[in-house]
Amino acid sequence: MAVALKRDRALLLAAPALITIVVFMLLPMAIALVYSFLSPSPYGGVQQPFTPASWVRFFYDRDLDETLIFDTTYLQIFSRSIILAVLTTIGCFVIGLPLAWYMATRPPKMRSILVLFVTIPFWTNLLIRTYCWVLLLRDQGLVNQALQAIGLIKQPITFLYTDGAILLGLIYSSLPFMVLPIYGALEKVDPRLIEAAYDLYADRWAIMRKIVWPLAKPGVAAGTLLVFVPALGAFLQPDILGGGKKLMIGSLIQQQFTTSRDWSFGAALSMILMIFVLGALMWSAWRRRHPGVAV
Image (tube, rainbow, N blue to C red; front, side):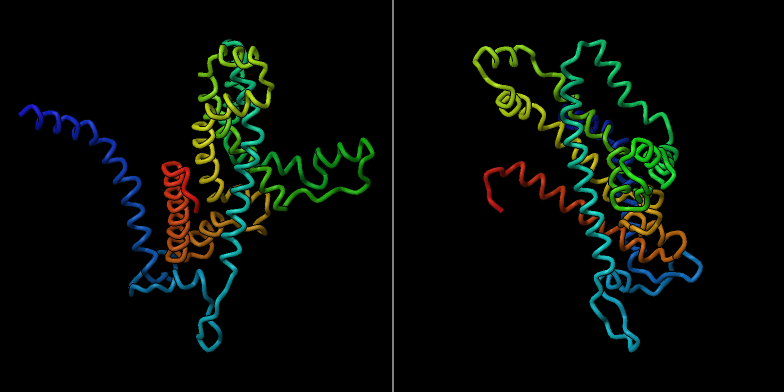
């Protein structure tokens, strides 16, 4: 009786979380999966019959005689998205780890102020913050004006509508998601560990490698997840800073549901992206459980 009562209480406590997962995660995924196997409607939406054409379209194109030809167009967009997401994660890590360590080693009052500075960008809409980079990077923007004023360049440099501009926007918008988890892990470091290491004549590199890095690993793992996944599906930065010329998988999906009105192909692209992300997460979890196994 007592065991059954405990089980019922556990189910009751878990019910809100389970309902949230089903309604806001599993149900939309199921709808997207079904849509990906339906035919696109001429005015948006989907219609019968069921067909795998949207999945085939990701890898193949049709010739004039309806022959399937292997096409790498969408694979290139997917590859560009992965590369930019990886570079964004690396850039956020390179900047975020030293910044988080600096924040964690300040006095408590100073830490609160620094955390406030890191979170201030969240007070402004991402669209506005991203568009501000257009004003900075355009040919007549502040960056080119400053470089011309100090005599480094004579003609404006094209910063805007490039992969570099997209990468800069992604790093800028994603950096707090790397800094805060690492800071949360490092603020728990006991200063006496650092003092003891110095007493044992350890240099700064040895302290970073033997003490700081092992303690920062959980924060780095969380920050990597929080940066890589949103960056992989980003569409705002490619549209604004890339000018729509440098497509990423997120902006391609957004186009299918808006201008192209091909919901079936957009759903298929979404499922392919989700399968890749889930596969990467499962592989990462397996590697953490089996660190000594070579792949």
